[in-house]
Amino acid sequence: MTGRPHAPKLSRLAASADGRRRLLIVNADDYGLTARTSQVVVGLHRAGAVTSTSALVLAPGFAPTAHLVAGHPTLGVGVHLCLVGPDPPLCPATTIPTLVGR
Image (cartoon, rainbow, N blue to C red; front, side):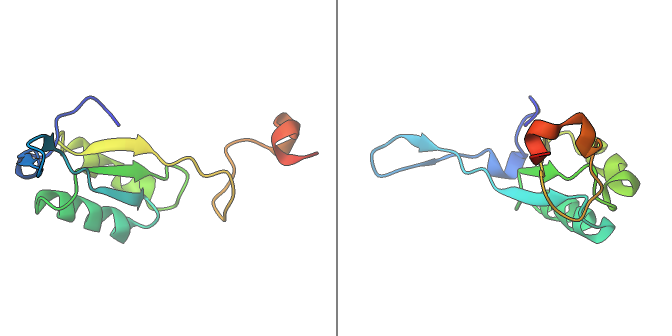
């Protein structure tokens, strides 16, 4: 998560039964999985339903939609670290043999 403030609609905290204030963070996973996934995440943030997202920066939908999060400074963005899956690896297995068992 970045140091950006939470979405205004969700930053209103509610008092719990013991009188302490609570904050609910709603994270939308897999930003960048597809362009449509990214658009939906941003739309949900605009509607006040999502406070943060985790970005799959190697997924096919990230590069064409990365600019969308830049326009929403109240949307917290973290990195979705994906060690396995169909997306291309960041580096070849020969450079990280202890991680891939080779």
